Length: 241
Ligand code: FPP
Image (cartoon, rainbow, N blue to C red; front, side, top):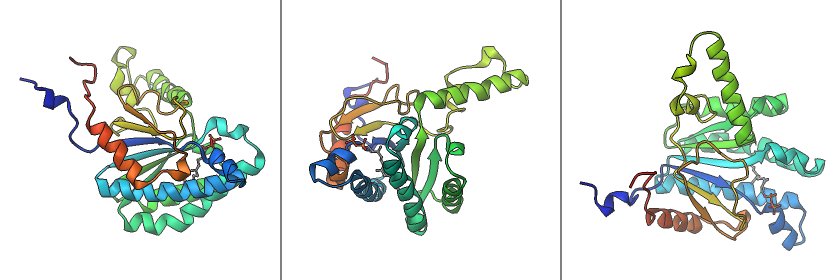
């Protein structure tokens, strides 16, 4: 028989999704250029990935650049793209030494060939690691991901590899960028915004949401622990009774 305790996720969330929001406001409040917020934000992500590994979290999916972010100023875009390049080169060895597997999710083919090469190199270099998977969402949009999955499935239907009647949740999940991964247990969003902003739309059907007013550059390991503790106190019925 099921007891109340069965509903409590006493365990650590396996998969944590993060919307790292508030970098520009953080910078603005300090009269700094927005790029400074992103620079500190990238450093914080590095710390949080390390802390997540220590807590026993197995997957972190972080929203680093959305499809909508191309609307920002050329200068700001340039800084974010520069940070990707800088951190990929700087952290590749370190990720590997810490047992982190790195993976990009998003429309990578629309990024510069140079950056694509750095992303692929890091993915290949860290492929064998199992301690923690870092999924970096880059040029990512949740609807675009679903569109891409539908196209892949439609191709297979056309080639007679899938029958339309066979299409179910599992087949759709298996054609997303996150194919093979469990859905996020917990979503953390900083900066006080209460939206999911086109992030992991399909995957977050039953995810627990945790919001904080802090800006991402101020987010600490202790805040991560706090979010996890609160998650552990929630009752997850996953649609059941
Ligand atoms: C949201 O804050 C943040 C972003 C759009 C960019 C996030 C990028 C990083 C943290 C750098 C990532 C770099 C690496 C190497 C992973 P915002 O700019 O929307 O801030 P606002 O809400 O105050 O305007």
